[in-house]
Image 1: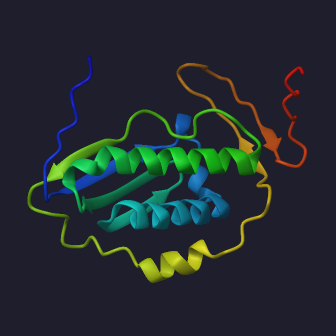
Image 2 (image 1 turned 90 degrees about the vertical axis):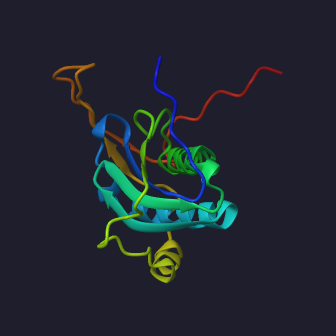
Length: 168
């Protein structure tokens, strides 16, 4: 049984999460733009302060202080599910985008000194960048679950197999 997540009111959290099986998703510029769009909508929906946002290859890390401190699970769920659904639709793929549960720690003393406030004006400008109707994305994986397995496939919403229509 996993340990319950520690939540508190009016505190900062350090949040870390990874893309499924370590895929370097955030090296793809369209993925970064899409994530910033989702992040902006998440902020509008739930309200929070954020500092030190880092999107690095297969990792996402930031410091967050929700307006309602107990809403961290709702914020993360909505953000990750919305990003997954839109990314999968644009790439024509299905399945999980994010790996295991996100990790969070309460920072009783607040975020570190060097953690700068997210530049929401720059995020807004970046989020307005046009994303193609279909993203060509190379998916490869190799993990302890599938040692030595490497598969590379090109996905595109235009040429992805369409599901069969239901009978009737």
